[in-house]
Image (cartoon, rainbow, N blue to C red; front, side, top):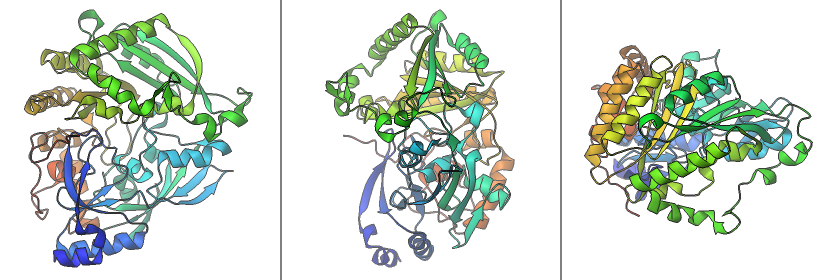
Length: 499
């Protein structure tokens, strides 16, 4: 049976080592890169005959195991990346799922249009963004990306091709978006973009002396086009959670006298060097010695002091520079060392957020495992199946994976309890530590029952699977595969990348 699959798809002959973005998990898989829906349909047919499962992967930017499928087939969709239609009068674009955020804005910005929701990096694919229903620094104002999708077509593992919109096949529209690639494959995506009159944003930066003050400030500015805060997770005492906050607004028509230039891709390009001297491709090597508790304590203190000195600084910044801060330093994730990093992102309702996030930071500090990068955002709920959003706040926290990996898993388990007790939720694009019990508690039995009914309808042979699916979502009726489901302990049976 295996020979049937390999003979039909010669590129599947060899196992390829894939990793998550945080470089903390690697898993072998048979990699296939389709360029058409027909090729995907044929792969589905062969997988059903052979018993192989298929995991979906865009640019591989998920921090956990959402784009890994250990020992099985992984569908890399980056070559399925054509712009199908673009209307510069209406701002409506139709693309294939492998188109990246970068491709999207480079096509549309000069015509005065911008993706209404973007993540912190421009390299994810649109298919991946919809699969995880990504959010940005403007979530409270604009919601997740799924709210700006006018329609999509998708191929189900049954071979059925469907068209979905908010008023057409609505149950599938609100489920395939957010389902982490477990129900079907997007084959085209129609998106409404946002009208712009400048490639610049009006930005204000200021500091908050502690976490509670930061929440109060964000609440006062929650209706801004963008509002986001960096949090010092190492400072303690009265300075616990001190932060630098940024709010930003789009410029109205006529406010930018040089709009014809600032709306060009050439203007929006990030520089290749730091201070005109050091190549940014090498910066992660200079950052790496500081990625420890002492070093990051010094860095965070210095960053806060500089921000404090420039308090309530107003300036204009390019769309790319403001939105894609993570792209300033290529391969920055390597600075975390050979065991990599995980990101832990919790979403907590407004009423309980200040106390809960304070407890999260204090517990991590007490365990000697503070995170090195924390970002807070304001959120509002949405109607998608696996929604992570709440009427409240999120904090995304980057943890270096220590030698004692189980200590980090124990911390994550205890953090989960604090988040769940506060009525919080989690985000599958960032997760590598949740247990099935925690996932059930935040999603709820009703949501899981809806998902499993949809899984039976769209994928009755459970062809679409990933390590995340087997870790959190697979029930006892799903056929077992090789390898067995991953263990509930962080990175069990998986190999941390050593590079």
